[in-house]
Length: 259
Ligand SMILES: Cc1cc2nc3c(=O)[nH]c(=O)nc-3n(C[C@H](O)[C@H](O)[C@H](O)COP(=O)(O)OP(=O)(O)OC[C@H]3O[C@@H](n4cnc5c(N)ncnc54)[C@H](O)[C@@H]3O)c2cc1C
Image (cartoon, rainbow, N blue to C red):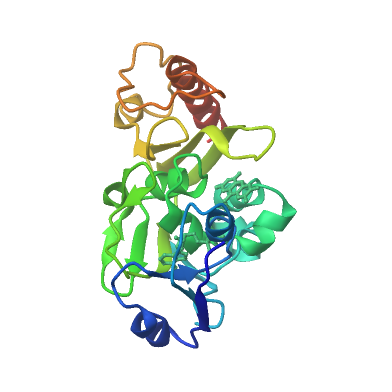
């Protein structure tokens, strides 16, 4: 493990000011990914800026949206009465991330910033037309995830909160890795009046919207002939790309049938 310095930001301004845009300083949220990466020498930041005192946690419900602060832990989203009432599927998703330790440390901002192809939240961000708020701008979820562990954030840019549209109904289905609970494939289906949206995680290099399936409406019965671009699908020791494509279709049917 390389040496690094540590500071604890006391506000959003303090956190952003502590960044040097060189990429050598990193924000520390729950540390569930960053700290193991540093220990395994996969990452070597010179400085960690701890966000735990920056006032970035909390949940706010508006008339049409629910906004979750970047430092809000998965366990708090899962247990939130406001989230359970407004978007129960989102609370359900958060409650199925990893294990109790991961849920009590990991944060929504850290998860979204990390953009792991197998993370759960990205499916919900796509399905719920979310907006990622940063210290500098607002980024629609569909433009946020751009590659394997890659997103639209610029060096030093800080996620402050994620704003989700409240749907009329939603359901999350995941085929989980039995060890880590990461999604081999996860599908988040949401309905907005008579319009449906499908967000898929785990299958490809990054979360995507399966718009072709949405066109089939809420009464969808058979997706076997609906086109699904597999050119960027993951293939690893857990599942082949073909099997992942099969899972996308099956989990979409299950999620939609629960709406
Ligand atoms: C054993 C295990 C099992 C897991 N299982 C699952 C699972 O089933 N599903 C799932 O979705 N996830 C899973 N995770 C991941 C976990 O959910 C964490 O959310 C994730 O590791 C990152 O969140 P964090 O808060 O720990 O971020 P950190 O590890 O602190 O940071 C991750 C990255 O994001 C950056 N960052 C953090 N916050 C911000 C911010 N606000 N703005 C900009 N950049 C930021 C950091 O600099 C770092 O590069 C698992 C992790 C472990 C260790």
